[in-house]
Length: 252
Image (cartoon, rainbow, N blue to C red):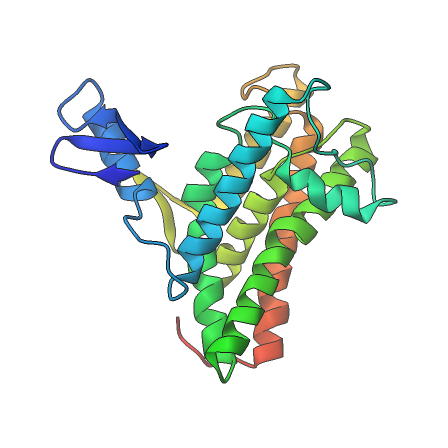
């Protein structure tokens, strides 16, 4: 996505399409999209957070497009408990809809990736080590914690779980532990920290499922449990790596 004087454009296969305008029907919404989802950065090994974000987005979009062409629906396995950890981790790339997880990845995961990059850089002695530690931590947040969250969601409810709801919650939990007062959403005088988003989504979706409402398409009780487990996992991971690097003195 790129922003210009008129609004926000999205580029797809060398074509650009306008998705909103500052002076259109919903200028406030366009302002929020411009501020939260247009990173306007180039892919470079010097910008590891942006590279990680784009790689994950491309993998999710590829999963959706291949799933459309695959005659059996989807080729990505979903989580069926912790007995098969590989399936649990791969289940994070399950993409039944074109928009699933992509908004969370821009709004929640990218700020987390920036924090992880800062921490891994401060805690290592060379760029090569920082890169190794950075991508290892991203793998843990996205696939390990996200996969475990999906597997636990299935184990408790016996409902199929897939996608990056647990991974997104892990990113928010990480931010909540590192910078609890950091505003993730600042729109229409609505200011929400990572903790607000974590608790709010869990409370609303859990209540909706308990009373039989479907506020978010495809969001079941298993997804709410995966969301909760992911948030706790991300919060705990921050404390583990800060102890590992001994960076409690460091201000970021």
